[in-house]
Every structure is written in C-alpha cells, then in structure tokens.
Image 1 (cartoon, rainbow, N blue to C red):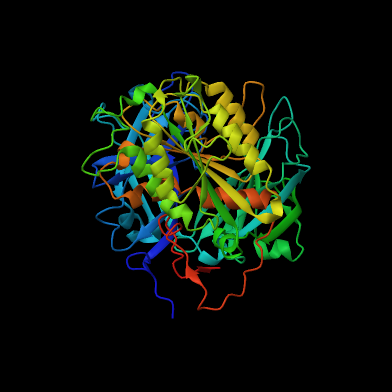
Image 2 (image 1 turned 45 degrees about the vertical axis):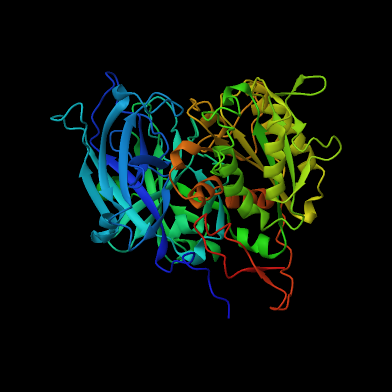
Amino acid sequence: MQVPMSGAFDTTVSKVEIRISCRNLIRLDVLSESDPLVRVEQFDPTTGRWSEVGRTEWQQNQKNPNFARCVPMDYWFEKAQQVQKLRFQVFDIDRPDSSLNSSQDFIGEAVVNLGDILGNKGGTLSRDLQNPHHTSRKNGIIIIRAEEVNADAQNSIVTFRFSGSHLDKKDFFGKSDPYLEIYRNNPADSQWVLVHKTEVIKKTLDPTWRPFEIDASKLCQGDFNRMLMFKVWDWDSDGGHDLIGNATTTLNEMIKGKRQFALIEPDLMRKKRGYKDSGILNVHQVDVRRVHSFLEYIAGGCQLRLALAIDFTASNGNPQDSKSLHYRNPSGEPNEYLKAMMAVGDIVASYDQTKQFPTYGFGAKIPPANEVSHCFHVNMNPSNPECIGIENVIGAYQHALSYVKLSGPTNFGPIIKQVATIARSTPLQQQVYWILLMITDGVISDMERTISEIVDASDLPFSIIIVGVGDADFKDMDNLDSDDRLLRTRTGKTATRDIVQFVPFRDYKRKHYSELARVTLAELPKQLTDYYKAHNIAPNPRPDVPMTQARPAACFVCVCGVCVCCVHVA
C-alpha cells in the first residue's frame, strides 16, 4: 500500500473558477464609458500582503461588462474563511498593458472571502465597489460567481469553428460588424455565464470567425448536455452593441451532427408578423480531444533537466561583507542565492536521473585574463559545466566566490542562448525538458537581446525561472513573465508560448523554502504540457516496474498544488 507523505495530500482541495461581471460602472472618461479590467488578489496573513492571482481581459466602452476570462483557484474548505480572502479591484485603463497603479484609473474594489462566494445562493455574490479616495461616490457594482471545476473535464479541449449566414443588417449606412459570444447555463440559479467571445468581423453579413479552442471545464463544466447559448452581436464603437440573434443547444447535439441554428431576436419575434429568423449560425467544426496531463508525461519517463545561472555582478556586494547577498554566514545560515538553489533544485533533482546540473555564472572577471564573462562554468572546468548533485552546485558556487572578481553588467542573453542550444540538440521523442533557474540581484542590462533569445527558445522544450534576490526594483522582469501577452521582439517576432516565470525572493523571505518552490514551479506543468501538445507528442507508455523497485516521486507537483506522492516513477 502506498501512503501519501504527511501533509502533502489534502482531500478537501477543489478547483474553482471565478467569473466576474460589473454593473453601472462610473464613467471616468469624459467622452465615453469606462474601459474596465479587474485584478484579483489574495491576502497572505503570514506576510500581511496582497498578491495577484489573476485578472480579466480588458473591455472597451463598457459600463456593464461581462468578462469572459475566468480566474482559476484552489479552494480549501478548512482555510476558506481564514486564508482565502480575495480583493477585486476594477480599473479604467486606456490600453491592456497599462499600469494598474494609478489612483486616477482606479474605479473601486471589493474584499470578500472565497467561502462567502461559494456559500451564497448560486455561488454568486454582489458588492458595491468602494474607493477610499471617493468614499461617497457611487462607483458601481461587482458580481462575482464561483463554480467548482469538474475534475474529469480538466483534460478535455473543444475546438470550434463558426460562421454566420444572411445575418440581419443592423447599421443604417452599412453592413453589420458581427461577433459571437458563448454562454453556459448555471443550473443552480438558471443564469447564463459568458465563457467565450470571438473577434469582431467588420462590414459583413456572412462572417467566418477564426477557429478557437476552449477547455471543456470552462465551456460546460464537463457536462456535454448542459445548455449553451450563442449570441451574435453587431459591434458598435460607442459600446451600444445590438443583438442580432441567439440560439441554444448542447455540446452533445453538435457532436451528434446538428450544425445549423436559426438566430432568433426575441423583440423582433414578438413584434414582427411572419418573422422567421435573423440569420443562421453554422458550426463547421466541433472536435473534443483529451489533453495529456503533466503527471502522464512524468509517469512515462519524461525527464526534467535543471541548469542554473548565478549572478556574480558587483552590485551583490563584497562576499566578505555581512550585507552582501553572497555572504557566507559562519553560522551556516544560507544566503538568498543558496535558498533559491535548494528550493528549486531539491525538487527538480528527483525527476532528473542524471543528477548532472550545468551551472553557469555571469557578470564576473575570470582569472587569469580577468575579462568579464557572461557565461562561464562555475565549477571552473573549461570542458564541462555540470555539477553532480545540488550539494556540488553549492560547493562550486562557494568556491567561485573566492576565485572570480565580481563585476558587471547584468547580461542574461548569453546563458539563455547556451541552455537553449542544449535543449535544441535533444531529440523530441526522448522527452527531456530543460529548466533554467536564473538567480539575480539587479536590472537586466541586455533586455532587448534577452527578449530575442527567449522568443527564439519559446518553441523548445525549455522553461526559464528567474528569482530576484535583494531589494532592487524588478519591475522590468514583469515584461519577461508574459502571462497576459506573448513576448515580442522589436523586429516583430512573437513567442509561441510563455516560458518565463519571475518570482521576487523578498516576498517569500520569511516563509518555508517549500513556499518559494511552490511559486517558482507553479507554471511549469502547464508550460511542459503546452509544449508537447503543440508538437503533437503524447506521453511515453508508463513502464511496468515491480513495486519493490519503484521509488516515490518527490514533492515537485505537491508544492505546485497537486499531490503526486502516490505516483511512482521508475
């Protein structure tokens, strides 16, 4: 019998999706309605700080927005009241990449417990938006809905392709500008929840929208017989979009072959004698496919390979000085660099059968030439950068501090290129996925080249984790951690996927190292599965290993929120 490791397995954790709408948002712009976006933050009682857990898409010219992008969260029944306090902040911004720190753009906020949302009728809660700078102002209302995700649906993807035919003309001087919205029905309160919105097709009555993919959990909570509603609208620049018509069906009906739906506009149907429809919605493609999970790749023998990059620039301070970030405390207390190495390295090492970790340094002068290098072997072996085991990584790092001279600048590009070259040389079918852990104290000096190298590496089995140590301003790092939009070079080349995760160490300084590990590794499972999905590579068959030879997988995924302590890897 396999027994989960103590404290790692929590039977009361559930996955929930949070969906947000607003009503009667105050108009901050003189000539138009608000252009809202909602940021969701969670309170950490151990640090007294709020941290972002997600945000909606940006909508233009909307005082009553229904946001399509949900915020996924874990829900612990026993923690929901004490720990899972959420803050919903509504901003009126000019562009989707605008800063959310300006009080001039702040509409208002609401603070609620996740348990209160789930415990309310229909899992829905509404609150007045409060603004501490305008205490008597009516800012609008936020409506928050939380719904548990069907676990069986989390690994299913639905691909759709729609078009419209003979749509009603809504513009007096021209054709319509149609777009499509998809809603799912919530059985608890019979409300319709927006789950997807297409692009607008300008000046046509016969639009063909781009194909898109959507999780089955998001579309219908995994219930293929749940009612779906399709609404086709005529877009207007002033936000007063006109309904062309709607239709209802289920995913099962479409799978079984029903591919055309009459679009009905309720007001016209009621008022117009002989009314037939306002056009036809055509379903050209509806495919459901299973997506392989991270655990399936790991169980099939996918190897995680870890490389490390350490900042040896002078801004870290003299290693002999107790204020230095590289200081070696006689008491044995590890510095921030060591804590980051151990937090990530100890976890990933369990999934690397080689236990060989290429370890590079940057920003130091290397004897005897004393020239600055931005990609040197920390073990000082000119032919092989690999250290056997994390303990030897630590030993090589500490020895290098007494051998090299800290210098600068802080260039990331050369090391990213070096590790990307290694990842590129690995045959796809071997299923080896590289992780580069970069630990730095300062602002990147070669940002343009770094972005270029990341974009080039985004189509490789490769992820980059950046841990910022010390108290520097790391705001530029958020440009690399492109959760909301893919990185793009100055020449216009766009990354194929997000491969970077940035974490400031100071936010986890007073916590157990496992919390740092959880945050730094949180995006890795999705990055890995996204890569193999894009390249159409299924997991290798799970090897048939006698239980006496199996070893328990370490807590890599446990710290990311999913326990795999009972998964055995050969």
